Length: 61
Picture 1 (cartoon, helix red, strand yellow):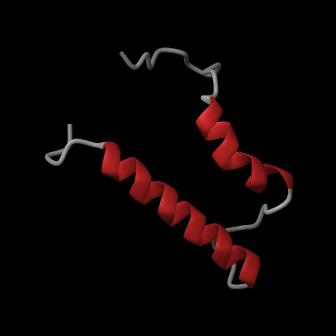
Picture 2 (cartoon, rainbow, N blue to C red; picture 1 turned 180 degrees about the vertical axis):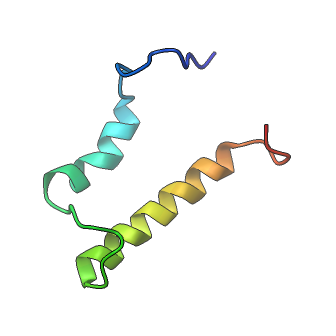
């Protein structure tokens, strides 16, 4: 079961922390910027979006 009623204190899954840690520590950049770090951040956002979408049912909710 996925519990979604944590409001602002949702515990972070270890997998999510591992995926985010490089961006939080040293690879932070604005994904809307045209420079190389911004393009890398944009690619990471798009990849994460695709990963989440792949977990959703085909017909949506």
